[in-house]
Length: 353
Ligand SMILES: [Zn+2]
Image 1: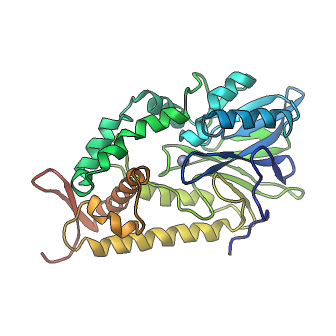
Image 2: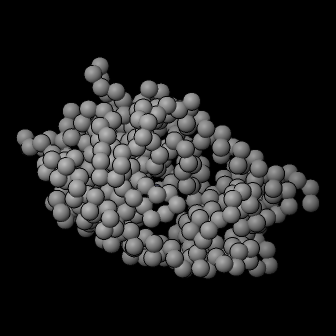
Image 3: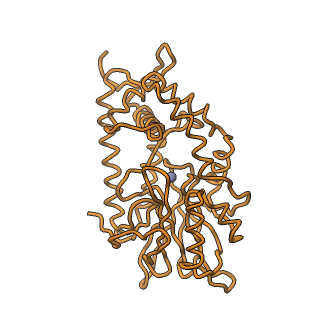
């Protein structure tokens, strides 16, 4: 059983000190998933007390107003020394530029996430809508779901809506870096599958302090992390990358307090990782059974997702379906062929026609 040290999350504009100098705040999101957790760490730079912010929220007037309130109240008008962003998704990087302009603090991010934020905002490097439409058509979505075009049409706009601008400079963080923030040292680890070079931060603690993991979207307590294939890497195997990334957590104790981007702060890291592994094994087994006959990713959506999918969810769902099929394909447990329309079909290996 996962345990949740705080019964309730903080209300918008309020904070909870989850460990000495580590504050949990929440910001609203305009999606079915209606919140993101952000973290404020007491910091000291050049003799001046201040703050490090971890993740920034979706760029909206509502989030900006809440930040103003936190500056005055939670942060007692002390300066922001640095803004760390775990990965480029709009709910994480959305307010980075606004915060950078308001505080003068530098953005700290991994290089691939920084570049991806710019590329997604500019429709560059294959982040454009046509590129993902091509991928989804190649996996049968247009044929299986004629309403998919509407879903695609909203997607690029959604990134720009939440990320008006991305800072033009950054401090590059890398796997293995150690960052001293206030009284704690945080170890940077990079993990894969959900985002191209997602950073998580682990503080090992000492006799006075607990171990803390800021896990971003890589480890969430209740919902499963989105792992999908996208238009600019149509041959990717992100599910393997995602599952392999759990090795990065293996030396962290089970008593580690996990600070996820969605849901509540919890302990039970390895139990949760075991649940993730089981979840994906079960999905892979179901999928494997569903492709006795050749099927496209669009045709197996119902195997992976039992609930009806709205247009926003459909885009993530097809990416997930391709990720699972690619996992089987790269393991040699499925073959991939193309039908007369050029749609990719996957079939379990070893089955008679
Ligand atoms: Zn994310």
